[in-house]
Image (tube, rainbow, N blue to C red; front, side):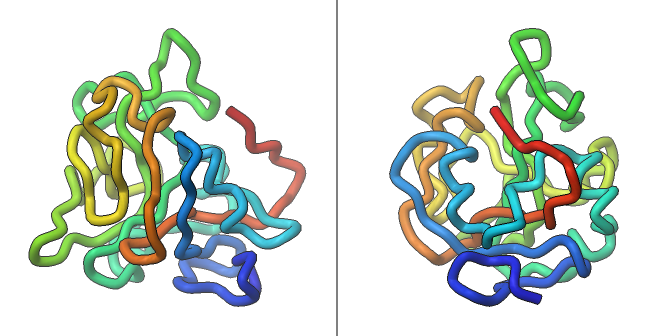
Length: 167
């Protein structure tokens, strides 16, 4: 499966969902769209990822330790529950939902999430390895995060199927 812009797939979650190691210097998850190959996009939401074949089991178990692969899903920052596919002022840009696994010295903010479809992990309020600027605005991490290197994951990419990913 070639879902990443560098010509492969760093982590395969399903035939139509891959994790791509990436870095970007512009703020926000949407700035990581270059991680995905042509014909792929950063998964827009829990619904996009689920419809593309992502399961909670794959989301929890397939990532290597110390990595996180982000979708565009976020929410209001309450009770580790994400909201609708395209958050706005009413829903918020708080927290970043995706797939990942903690490691010694690199702990995700939350694992085992059950209130966000097949997305079972989140980062919020603190930097996670090369995921930085999480404390710059802790109520809108999805809009302010930077990814400063190729370690610790990157984008959760879904194969295009008519879903438009935008922010």
